[in-house]
Image (cartoon, rainbow, N blue to C red):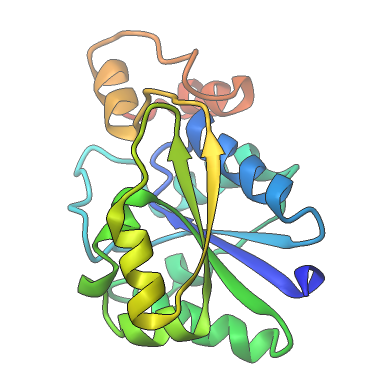
Length: 198
C-alpha cells in the first residue's frame, strides 16, 4: 500500500540544489501518502569526494535547510565510519520500519549502474525504485531489463530538465561567481555565512 512507502533519497548534497528538491517533490507527488527520509552520505562508493567540498556538519545542515518542508533529514550515514553502502542503510531502516516498503529515489544514471552496487540483488528484491526522467531524456533500456531480470519495482518520475549540478555550483563559488539561482535562498545564505566552497 502507498501509505506504507518510505522514500530514501541519498546523496552527497554538497550543496543540495533546486534539482534535488524537484526530485523530492516529484516523488511526493507520485506517492502523496508516502514519507521521505533524506540521507546525506559520508563516503559515496561511486563518487570521489571533492576535497573542496563542505564538511559533514555543513552538508547535514544544508540538507536540513533545503528539505525541511518535505521530510526527515537523517544523519545516520554521516555518523557511521567508512563507505556509505545503501544496502546497509536499507537494512537499518527496515529494522526501524518493518512494515514499510523502502523506495530508493535516484536518477536514471544511478539505476543504470545498480548492478555494480554492493548487494544489488538484495536492493532489487527488497526495495522499490522511483527514478527521475528529465525532459528530453530518453528512458533507459536498463529499466525494462531490470524489470524482466529481477522483477524490479520501478516507478518513473517525469520531470522538467534542470541543468545544474553540485560540482557546477562549487566551481562557480570558488571562482567568485554567484550560484544564487541554483539553490534556495536559505541554502545560499548559509553558504555565504559559513564561507563554503571558497
